[in-house]
Image 1 (tube, rainbow, N blue to C red):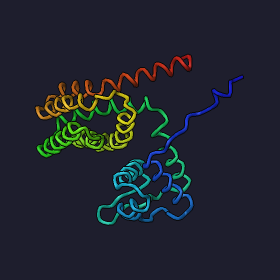
Image 2 (cartoon, helix red, strand yellow):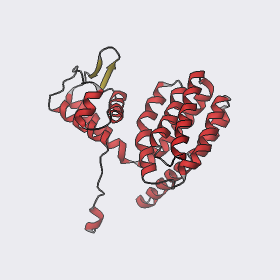
Image 3 (cartoon, rainbow, N blue to C red):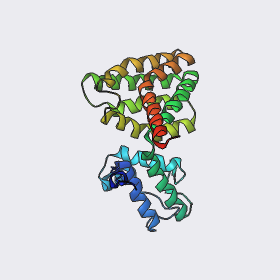
Length: 245
């Protein structure tokens, strides 16, 4: 018989994005938001939820990616035509997906970013280089001033994804990166000094993209994300031992 201590589960702390998705789910399943209804503007939603607009934008992006919301640049964001039962099921899966397997998310990010940077090195435009350089300088300024640079780190990686010119890779990275980077930095998973070390790594990635050197770009990202990848491998190895497979 299992000891009662083995039945205790860790407490899951919801992120603001999860809370927004959960509230939107409640509005949809209760019938207050129907398929085809238009959502209020981001600014108004942010005020009502009591969070920054970036959290609302991230929640909408995730729901758009899964086809639950549709955005028309001229008229706004709408609830998709899926049935309430289907919407309820998918939204539950999105929230569960974000926190269920941290090791799998780390691994997925690693391989997605390798693909993204190879395509970015091949396809980047002059504007992409400007955006990447601006993101790099903003990140360095925050780190050197000993300030939190989580958002600037996210922007640099998202700029790489945009430069890939592959909308599916970009969308998947947009879903994975915000929660992962926040978790990695806030929990100091890769150490206290990781931000300073990342400056030179970001520079190498940018130079490889600028030179359109696909191999160098892939190697630079692999080196940059190696700590994270090793944590993922160790996590999978530990799971294998626990489950005896």
